[in-house]
Length: 324
Image (cartoon, rainbow, N blue to C red; front, side, top):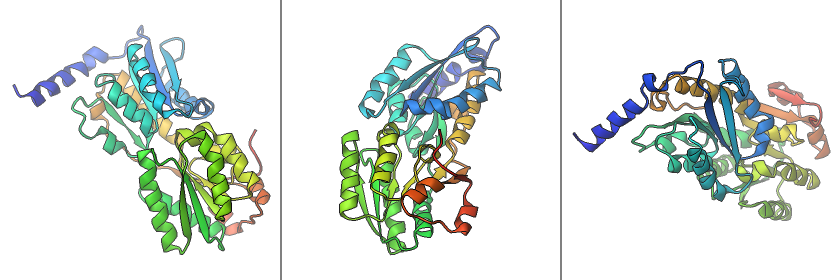
């Protein structure tokens, strides 16, 4: 028997519904490998509720093992290994570094990527077929973000992007931002922001240029230091466009991107199927389908931006002020 056929046979046996069928008496353990503990307040709650609706009750037939890198991407490898040692039934990840760490840590435990930049690239070439999930980016979305900024600020001439270029997904996103800004006649500059200490330096550099607006990438560094990023944008009186809504809820100017709660609901559906016996490689890797434009009017006023009513009518959510 050829090696590839042998591996495929082992995988089929490992994922047999008769082996993994859900039973009323069994308790499942789900590992959560995330970028920031902030997800506990939003996306994790959505994920738990979606599982509850499918009969998984925390403390009765499911427990969660939550692990967060909290701004230290280098810690993902050990956190993923820890979840493997705990022998969790499935690992749910957010972000490219977390997904890559889970991929390196196990070829047997199913991994569901709730939100990752390029899921196809991650699952490619994995003979065990233990990974599936959802993309958090779509082709052209970064360009759309720049175009919306142009609609918001018709006189914008310079846009700076705060991005952690050590994250593979951010490099391709910067290329989109660069191309879109060039097409719109906007000067652009990328500020490589890899650590918490880099954030203040990047804002100072943007002010010295000076940038008329910012596009802020989203990864472990930005998520963990969300309050600092939003605070510095306000202190420098610069409109900042974010990737996800939680930055706007925290007082940021605006965001346009994928709805993370929607992705976590879909991830819960995949986890449900896996725990009931479906093999991960039987679940297609899917791209996002729900996007949202969110605007914070109080933040706009604070940086001196008056938004046209036509633009406000396009927004999915308009926040009157900072959320509690």
